Image (cartoon, helix red, strand yellow):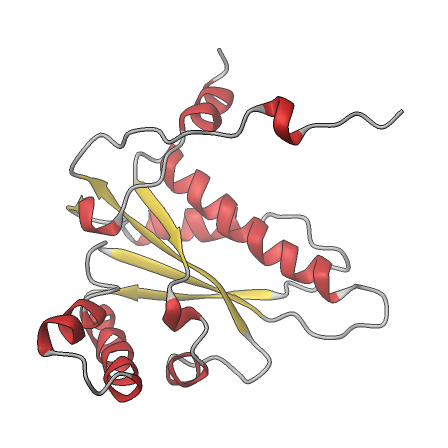
Length: 188
């Protein structure tokens, strides 16, 4: 079987808590981001961008997330706040894919948003092809305007996802997939 087809048939997300080791080096990351940006993009608008979190930057972002959580949940204990603080620290590299979709005279907003989703999937598959484990997550803070602003997103920008990239400490089990008979119709 073709290696690409086999990768796509067997690709599986790995929870960030099950990641360890090193993330992509500078050259590998450049390759991954270059591949991620090779997606359908009607009008060549590049309606997305990347924010890379590595090293101490993951902890700095975690402080922002924890502070927002603590403010919104004053009853939360320190153990719960610690969980929020560590959201981006489990994988060695986290790439935020930011949707910069904006009204355009010819290109519908929906197409621009879909393009950002394609970026997330390209990045995920490319990292898996390089031997890394990945998880594409948004989490609550991906929708929290205060967190997004603190992470550098403009008011019109939205988070398409956080792609966690690392090495798996376990072999992920597959999950139940939909039966094609339940999701496919043929127009006649």
